[in-house]
Amino acid sequence: MNRTASSSSGASAPAIISTTSQSSLNLSVHPLPLLNISEHFTRTCLQTESVSPLLVGALLGTQNGREVEILNSFELAISGTGEATLVDHAFMVTRREQYKQVFPSLDFLGWYTVSPYPTATHLSIHSQFAAYSESPLFLVLSPTAITNASEDIPLHAYEAAVEIVERRSRTVLVEVGWKVETGEAERISVDWVARGGGEGGGSLASHLQTQRAAISMLHERVLLLTRYLTGVLLGQTKKDHDAIRALSALVASLPASEHVEFRKEFDTEYEDVQLTSYLATLTKTASTLNDLVDKFLITTANKESSRDAHSGPGGPGGAMHGPRRMGGGGNRMPASGFSYHRPEDTWMRQTARTYD
Image 1 (spheres, rainbow, N blue to C red):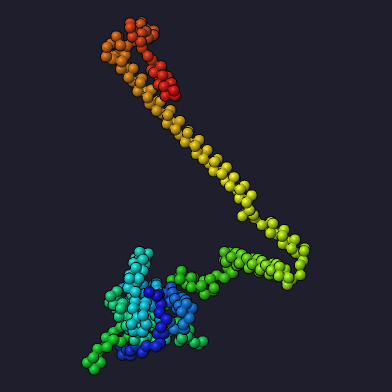
Image 2 (cartoon, rainbow, N blue to C red; image 1 turned 90 degrees about the horizontal axis):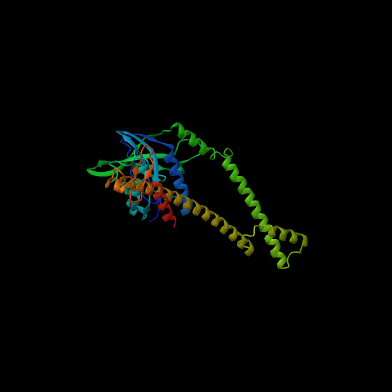
């Protein structure tokens, strides 16, 4: 399904525009949707090579009673031609939900197209948006109405209405008055765009222009050298040994990225760097493991000390299973037939078993 149709919007009969009814809507249009519509029309004309392509887009904004404000827009996918033109509703719903996530305050208000005047094809498309809005707006941009003397934007807004004529109902379009509403940030942006996107004022733009000029000059000189060598090989150009030697020296000074010896040396240095990185990682891992072993040994020694302390004089068995204190010197003497192991000795034995 295509985003735009190549059929001309002017091939259909003009729609009926009411001259008796007036709309009470107060419509404000911001610069962003106007720029989006213009960009959509210009891009479609270049892609389809048509001066009057049929294009359709959605309008987003806010509505408070009869106060309507259009703040943004996006293009829609359509198929078919003439009054059989169909809007891709799945694409529209997806895009509307995406915009709703970013701009939760914006709702679908209507749609836009580019045409000299509304036609029956536009009325057929307009009826397809009734499921999304009770009274969708219809904006028509008419670039062919621009003249050198005109300063107004060639934009017309409509809303659909039903009239009873000779006991028969018919759908007509009622024109809605509108005005351009801009904020401070929008005025600065529009002025920046009108001046050519800050041409000559941005350091990035000047830098890119310098780079582009340098690359273009290099490309032209490479083509000149290529044509010269081709002419020498075909015998159409006189051979200049000085120029050929200078060209050979220039080629030899270029990076030998595809040379076998260069690749071999590069791979060797790359492997050395990787090996150094692996050794550093291995050393760090060994240090972490050593810290873990030290903590484990300390924990085990504390448990052995606690166990030996319970088997002492205050533990089960009394003096038969523990040391005997003599006098006030505090020297520990082994009991008859039993040996007492100090906690320090237990920790040393545990350490020796672990490292063995």
